[in-house]
Image 1 (tube, rainbow over the protein chains, first blue to last red):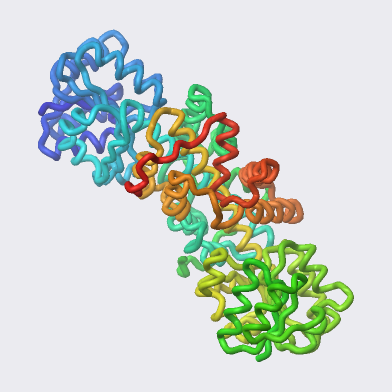
Image 2: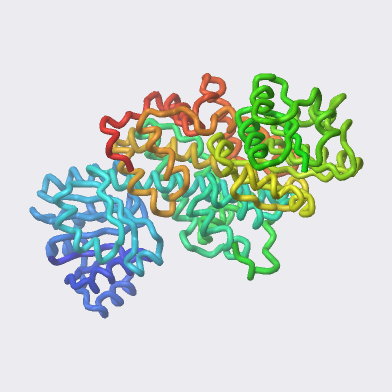
Length: 302
Length: 302
């Protein structure tokens, strides 16, 4: 199978490399040429447009920042749709609006193309190590065709349902992750300002009903004064904006997610977009006019 | 050691029974006499006032609904303070405001009484089985004295810090639990209304960054149509109100917890106080004017 990959960013570049390492012949396209050179050096071919990629391959991937970027690469002159041919499978690893995923899938279906929305979670580390979780929406037959390729980039592949369902699962994931991040921020600042040791409080609660991946993994970074990503706050904000736009389209008011979205929006406003998503604690610190104390002795890790 | 227990409600009654089973001689006091009779039948002695309990015992426990109830039982005529004596240890298993815990501890200290705030988590089941988590604030020396008694009611005992720290940890716990419950409600209704199968969505996300005790344990109850407690929404609302009052006292704005508090407040307003705390999904259903579909085939559990 000949594979195409469009969008060689922080996530896309290592994912494309893993497909190449998996033994598939690869054609790439990217606006910035540095990443293209890197992939070509590793054995990929280059194309001059998304159309040219689509014309040459059996399976074409995209990995782009947001819904309008994906729409553009598919629909523009010399876009994927222009190079579409019967039997081509389109896999989008971007996180975009479920509604846009469905619309593009419908348009491509008219040209005999099956589409999968396949957003990922697991961050840059997961992309490099090929251990991403992949949430897939679209025809089961298409998934089975591309599964050998997905196995080179991800560890867990879940077929959630028809077109759009992968994006819906990613949205659901981000609703929960953002809630946990903000709740952690609030409880840490609350505990400190109320006069307790936040590290002791985390130890007291992290194995009970409050247990979560976030409390297992993020507090020690904050106690160490480490707010570098991880998963960037700017991307968390982007994903939350997708959810809030979708909540209007699907008629589902989301009061809690509205608040988490606004707090991540406040991070952008305060120049914190390149920090970790756990650094939303910086906004709670500003609200309370305080800062989380850095642990003096960081050898006692919880 | 002679032990006193005041407040034989849903939690207090089984906890008092476990202390008795642990071999401690027990004196009880409760407004409703049915629970007193049950404990007396099991071998406890009865007293006619909190003062009378305090006068007879080495360690006195309370387990009452809210801060004013605890203040009353300690401070009232014929209350605990009236019966206090040097060497008495006071242990409060109620969930109340950290500030009230500190104030009462200071008053009791003047009579030579050491106090521990020791709220619990783990619910009625944990109280019956003696497997509660106990978050303790107050002097280490007092904790070591009463630890043999606490071992009869709880499995995990964490000394969080000085007076009030146990209540602060419980508050932190409830900030996170409420956030997870509401986020779960929002993501389930969002997923359904967006056209995905909520059960598949949970499967896709529950082992990744969104992982939590809540997603591990609560969705199947909702898919089965089971909204019975568990942990009652009315108690969740009470605990959140404590947090919001405390947030003002300690000067920590909590925007996310403000929203979760209001959504649990909406449950009270809609007669849902005796449902499980996961039944906050009922409020999101009302906002979206829909209901979560009950799984047709409940044999396929996630």
